[in-house]
Length: 83
Image (cartoon, rainbow, N blue to C red):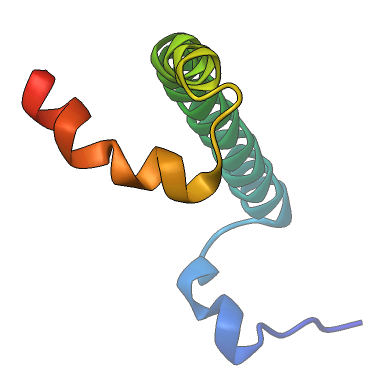
């Protein structure tokens, strides 16, 4: 049986099947490891943002308790000036 490379596999001319298998497996591992690092970076960013936003949201809820939406909006300019 004679095997031929497809157009997409021309970059593997001269390699044995074992070498191509090794290269392809390495590509999968590298992509998997990169995804893991990316997921870790995203989780770290979300954790840092949550550390800032959750207390701010809680303070906002406490400050706005019992106020209507229009009441909260009317006080925005005064609250910003007070900061």
